[in-house]
Length: 408
Ligand code: F6P
Image 1 (tube, rainbow, N blue to C red):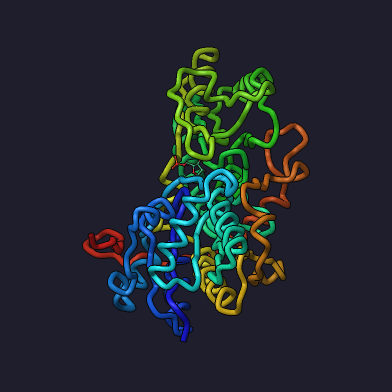
Image 2: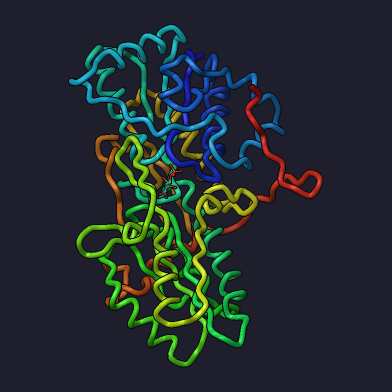
């Protein structure tokens, strides 16, 4: 028998983040935990004493099946940065007071590199005040930019969706007998893993995209314009993928070259949106052809009707592994995925020190980008391919996927 545990979700959601929530909940229950609390809107909600007893919300095997297939964060999310411990101990004292009130033995936070900052600070503070509470990070992010792990849960499903709709956009984009230039804008911030997934569209039934631009290398607008004009010489349609985070050499994001509204979150991240529109307008104006800017935007992280079974399974596993590790005494760690075999693809879990992961962005290695910076290598495609395999059918009710919603 173990004490009570608490779990929160933080940062941008994914279509499988709730599978990790189920992994924590079910494993904690199976291993004899008392209550499993869920923070509402992560650590920010906990500071306002907003939490639920998850057993009152996940009541049957059907609820578990539905929750796994429900996109976005069931408990709500936040983008909240805890102050440095040396600057404000009051907020930490309040969190530990609330955890004591709830008799918490282990604290789980499902999130990306920003959210792991919370685990880092809380586990550091626990050492400072000699608290026994265990703090474990459960990885998730569609961006796939977490250090020390082969990949992150959430990425495979987003990549599957991106590659699938890219195939569909290519079919549609090449339909007319006059040229159309389609530019697909993909999320991922300063890492190009998601944009690279558009390369998976190419195959015997699909021409693939013509050009791929990742944020790892400076974007040269003049070279881009010249390249597209060259490709468009014979009057054919063109499909291009760009990351939302592409930057010109002076460090400005491409979307910042056009009129835009600036929004910056608590971690100092700008809202990245509009690179495709800027480039499509420029191409349209200079080439006199029809252009389309297609922002995949939130669709790529909430398409739970098209998750990868590999991804949703691993999302569950990392949640379960975090609980097991905490109950065995681990703290200040993050569960990571280790690819132990390529063929057949096999990943196992282990844990890594959160200090090696929090606030660090893992970028696409430059050797996986072609020399002219306009496409990605076969190695990168080979790395992504196993992560998008197999499906988990949605539970369809009245023609639509059924989700589980938190009862208010
Ligand atoms: O953190 C993942 C992510 O989806 C990024 O790819 C994207 O830039 C960002 O979140 C968008 O976040 P928000 O939903 O806060 O605008």
